[in-house]
Amino acid sequence: MSDGPRLPSITGKPIVVSGSGAPPPRAPERPVVPITPMLAARRAEYVRENIATVRQLQADGYSDAAIYDRVRTFADGFPYIFKFLISKDPENAAHIARSLEVLDRMATAELSQHEASVIIGRESLDTYKPQTNGGR
Image 1: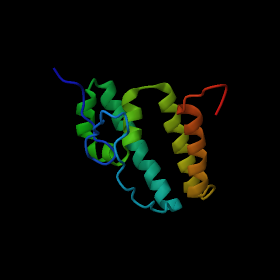
Image 2: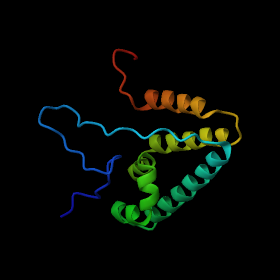
Image 3: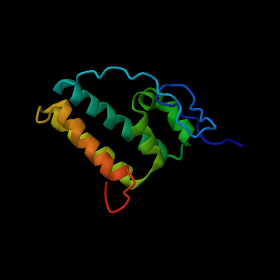
């Protein structure tokens, strides 16, 4: 019996949780590659194509592991988007759609990479961070 698909961590190494309750050490982050409007347009197109592929594979009844095998390059390059797609959570789908809208605005030079990052960061915080005591 399988525990389900084994998806890689962001670093490509298995996540090991120590008995101390402390999170595992983080790998050094790669520097951010500047995204030009042309690159933003290409990236949005690539992500949309892969979202359509994942959705079609889901509709055809493929398992999460089989879908991962079919779109491995996309899943490894955009792990959070892939995990959001696999979750089938409407809130995650809305977040992906909003992220693509912001990427489209970068493609038309309406937003800078920094502005887009701030927008998505704030929305992610509001959506995914548990709220306590009536707010932040």
